[in-house]
Image (cartoon, helix red, strand yellow):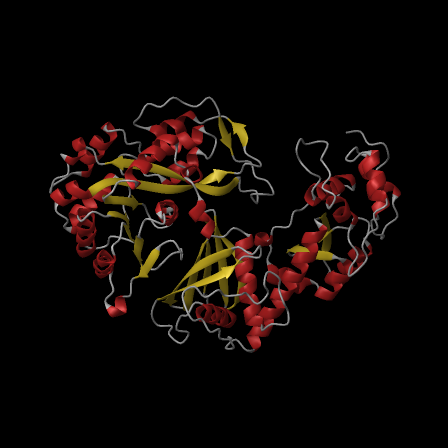
Length: 600
């Protein structure tokens, strides 16, 4: 687009802040807004209390349409990108996961950065990179270069992000330093029952008046929610301990804290989760129910183990929103949805969901049970531990210390007049026998197994000692699943398919190569990974009369698989191939998680 005036860098004096009138003039000159919109905005007064509002924020708040992109608005990020191009400065969207917080906050004081409205985001031996939203305020550059004896590199960033992360980064660093002075302090919180709602100290905002350890934990949880993390890992090391988030199945380093501070953080979390703070020699489990910064309730399942360098904690985050997912959102196609519905609406029998840890079994089961939990149905579960507390279920937790095992729990549930029973996992013969007994007495039973594919679930039951004739009489079907990363909808682009990779994916089947596929590119929304979110791929086995003939005491998994395929079962890689053809994921993602047919 041809500009109607020369670049502002060549005509604008240094070290002055941007004003709304000149921003409107430039926007109109670049045809980003109309003359009428500029005139309407020109009468808007920039707010000056409690702090001056950046002119880009004033424009973004009006939600004007972007003339270059249909059905898009001129967001603050869009306007920042435009301003960076006009002022010939590199644009940067601040990604907190890629910033070494301790390193950048040690470079320059908070007071100086706050006064200049700048944020250090990268430090190396020769250069420090600062994010700024004022391209013509440059007097601090030479000043810092002399003091720090490093080259200063400026990038233009969203003014709101600069302010937010400036406060968060320096507050976090201050709390961690304070925690070193008294790492043993960890305020207790009285929790009376499993449903106790833990109100984070900051209630969505970081409050510097609270105790420093509480603030660090609050920041950690809220930060994890904001970054879409599914797990938080707190890992002790000799000097500096690691905090890592799992996002879309991949672990990301977030922050490092001194090991004594990590001990205080874990003690605080154990207190919130009703765990024994003094017990550090054996594994412990707990749970926290709290709220995200947006006010949505979430549950966290806690697990701690002793390691050589201290206590390690993993927090798995469960979003109750997963209970509202339908079959399409889970990744089931129309055929798989119809088969699954036919299985879960049977009056009695056993339905199994299999897959490794982290393959989405809990999400699939809870979503299904939520749909089945009608007022006229008594739905009971026995779990170890209870993943998410759901009011429409009757949930019981395994307690090994009082001999409340899966098997004993099912025995008790059978006296509770249930219609549907969910057993967290079939681990031994006793539990398998109770599941069979429950189904034989007219109940629909759901459970999970850890197997590579659906046919292997049958041989696993046989290996546990379940008689073949009882499996024949009770088993309705098996759903095997995996989770794969989805291509980012904001940046995925058409690409050419690798014929050799496609052939390896569909071997030994004959499947037509799709005319086109999508490949990852990387953008601001997906942190330049090219992927955003995950979706399931499935292998659906229905126990047909023909398959029952192969369920024998000496059954071979290969024979079971061959018969299941004859009966219409689509294997995991075929399900994945359909997702590739639909433009949802890539061949590499499917090959990574789905076992090849000869090994499955």
